[in-house]
Length: 325
Ligand SMILES: NC(=O)c1ccc[n+]([C@@H]2O[C@H](COP(=O)([O-])OP(=O)(O)OC[C@H]3O[C@@H](n4cnc5c(N)ncnc54)[C@H](O)[C@@H]3O)[C@@H](O)[C@H]2O)c1
Image 1 (cartoon, rainbow, N blue to C red):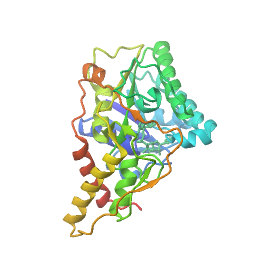
Image 2: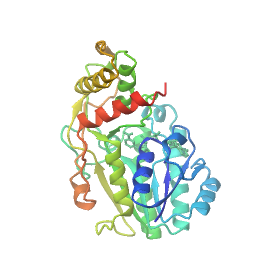
Image 3: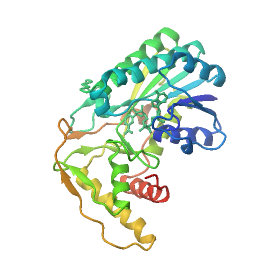
Image 4: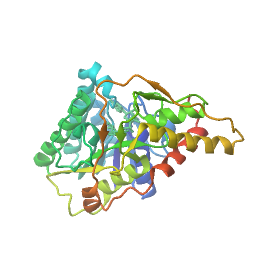
C-alpha cells in the first residue's frame, strides 16, 4: 500500500513511518519541519517539506505520492500556544486538516487515520474514560481536535472513505521534543541526564495515562492497514489509545530518576541526582485524566505492550545517546 504520513518527521509520526516500512508498505512523508526533523526518518523515505495550511502544496504532494491511505499526524499541538494564538491553532488543525481531507477525497483514498486526543476531549476524569464520555474540550487545541473528528465524519459520509480517530492519552518515548512545555517525560529525562533537578508543578499530584510512542505507532499501523470488519467505509470510528493506568508526576519523576541513574551508572557516572524542585501549580491543570482502550482491543486487536518502567528506561537510553541540547 502507498501511505502518506503527514507530520511523519515528528515524534509519533516517525515511529509510525518505522512501523509501516517494517511491514513492507511504501511510505512518503509530508512535514513542514516546524517541530519535526529529517533525522527522525529512515533512509529512503521521501520527505515533502510542505505546510498543510497551503492547499496547493498539499495537492502537489498528493499528486507526487498518489497515496491509498493517509495518516494525519501534523498539527499545532501546544495547548498553551492554542490559548495565545487560537487563529493559528485553527488554521493548522482545522484548515490544514480540511486541505488533507479534500486531497484524500480527490485521490479516492481508502482510509484516513487522524491523531486525536483523549486528554483534551474528556477533561477531568478519575477512572479510565470510554469513548462514550461526553466531549468537554476547554482549550482551542481541544476544540480543534473535537472539530477535526466532526470533519472526518463529514468527509467519510460524503466521499465514502473509512476514517479512524485515535484518541491518544499522554504519549512519551524516544524522539519526543524536550524543548516544548508539553512532553514531561522528555523534559525530565533531559534535565536529569544533565544532572539538573526536574521541576514539578504544584504538588505534582496530577495523574496521567502514559502510553509508549511505538505502541501508539502500532495502533496507527493497524488502523491504516489491517483488515478490520469494525472499520466501515463512509463512517468514523473513534478509539482511545492508552493504558488505562495512571501515574502522578511525583511517581513519574521517581521512575525517570531511577532510569536515568541506571543509564548514568553504565557510563561510570555515579554522582547522586538532585531532588526535584517544586514550582507553582499551572492554572487549569487537570488533576486526573485516563482513557479506557477496551474498544481499540476489540476493533484493532491492539493492546499496549510496553510497561511504563520499561518505556521510561528505553526513553532515558535514547536521550542519553542523542544529545540534542
Ligand atoms: N504527544 C502526545 O502526547 C499527543 C497526545 C495526543 C495527541 N497528539 C497528537 O499526535 C500528533 C503528533 O504529535 P507529536 O507528539 O508527534 O508532535 P510533533 O510535534 O513531534 O509532531 C508533529 C509534526 O507535525 C509537523 N507539522 C506541524 N505543523 C505542520 C504544518 N502546518 N504542516 C506540515 N507539518 C506540520 C511538525 O513538524 C512535526 O513533525 C499531533 O496531531 C498531536 O496533536 C499527541
